[in-house]
Length: 221
Length: 221
DNA sequence: CCGGATCCGTAACGATACTG
DNA sequence: CAGTATCGTTACGGATCCGG
Image 1 (tube, rainbow over the protein chains, first blue to last red):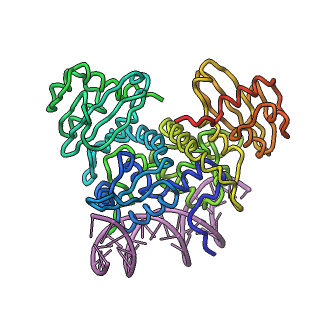
Image 2 (cartoon, rainbow over the protein chains, first blue to last red; image 1 turned 180 degrees about the vertical axis):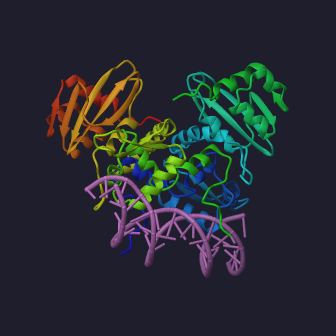
Image 3 (cartoon, rainbow over the protein chains, first blue to last red; image 1 turned 135 degrees about the vertical axis):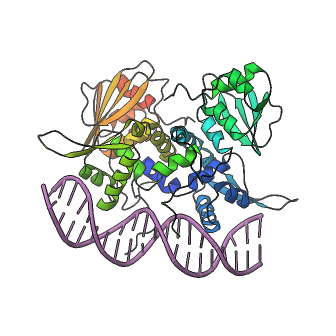
């Protein structure tokens, strides 16, 4: 007797959600796709260690579950890209709440052999966003960390992140990942932050604002 | 060559969270334990289909990861109980955001052979709670659905659920699960709800309040 | 009966090789 | 670059057994 694919078979919102996104790699794929459409190779690089076969079947599953659409880019550069659907994009809350919870686990420092990409901290940062403080703001912050560039837009009370450069950033923060981590997760006072090995384009008040907007302390529920 | 247990090995808040709670059954165990300590047998019954071996190893993993503590109840009735730690309890946000996302998946009706326990809808209900409306409330609602009894407490702007009876409920709703689902997920107007095969102890305004507090429409982001 | 431990077949995953 | 194919390993599902 064979069970027809591994499912919880529970009429429960949590169980049904886990039936769809509970398998290995799925949420990490969502993490990558939340900052814009990606190609097969980009995903493989970002997820590291995933086999091309698994990546392929995952993407097919996600397509079947209406989390992802696959489309061919118009010429020039005819390429397949994977993009989140509306249903997939609504997983942002799930990713943020998991990232917020997981931020506590980052206190245990980076282990040997553990991989790292600066933009992974983007979600940790966004998960600490304080909507009260950002209510009436309309700001754009650009970050150039190691060899990656991404930006955060605060608008309509919400904060969202994307890869690549920003249009007309109010602040540009350029540093290595260690200084960025101190900025985001540390209790770095703005004076000290400005003195670290980071190049900041923008005024001190704006930097202070960033620190407060995404400050994990005090821990909010 | 053997990889030392399956881990993402990514210095990323999401990936580290998934390393801890991403395995099968773990979040469903958290779901059960969020409404109070449980015994081995209770968990086995609630999770259905889980083997005693897996349940055992999962609980041990969770204990090792500081999500759960195992303690023996004082006599009479010397029994092992499993209880969430502080870190485990802080997963409530994760469970709620997943339940909120998964509620959309419940529109596809209950499949043949799919299991069901009324209290599973408790999390679906709590995930739709509107903190604005409940800001200054201090209410207790008791639900007796099929053969299960649980209650919801709204206090300090937050809503929490627990198994068992309430102390002095402001409202008691008694019905089968179908009527409860209509109450929670349907757009049942209060008049119609009062006319369904449900016995309500409490006044109409209180019932109306419940409907509004946990109304999934309009979908909030 | 509760709280597991042990064993075994199957499904999912990981690594690599291969192809259009 | 964007995947398929293959194959060894690990995790899970189901059943059985066992001590208190």
